[in-house]
Image (cartoon, rainbow, N blue to C red; front, side, top):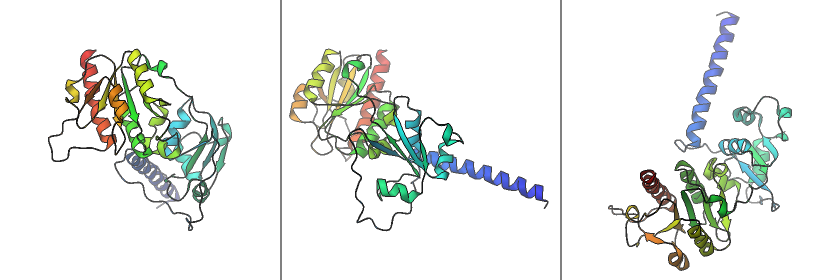
Length: 293
């Protein structure tokens, strides 16, 4: 084999390897295949999370960071990235040409900031939190999702993905007993945090009353609800309200929503994880709104 043939074969191999890697990355971001565990710092016991400033957020993971870089509302502070991850981000070949600082680091450098459990894929982005949104700005949205003290950031992130998939106008949650904007939440949302407003309010009952004034029917999901969800819809604007993973809706929330409804499940299991329930409820609501339009 000639040198030219060897060079051509090497180029083809590199090209196909890049394509295979891109396909694997896409499947991992969609949750179709697991993300391999990265090598971790040897000592986890001495690691302590950094003291973050109120306006400081660290995002990580290829898909999450890429979505944040594409979001014009994000204020970017610094990208810390490995050489390999920088190439996979596909944001250009010259880091000096970007509008934000880029620092090339090792995976272990990122481990020291994020800790041994974060699957960062060699990329970490320091940013400012997204701008605060007001309920008044949602008056043209036909579908909203309201969370009554759902505490697990993984669940909230999964709910965000479903909310974006069904074109909800916002995810609204309480300031207390709910996750703030963070790397864990953003990674679980897999880019959805950049695509939908995440609004945290001080008093949920008052927020529901404001949604009523804006023309929303608020429907609280409850396993003991008096009627199935699909038979509860009335108007052209719906805000679904879901309770916490264990306790469900609080009493004040039950008293404030327009209606209570249940998801009918004919099988032996009568309850679902809140993120699964949210996806089913969003689908049913979107079907109703489509028929009304």
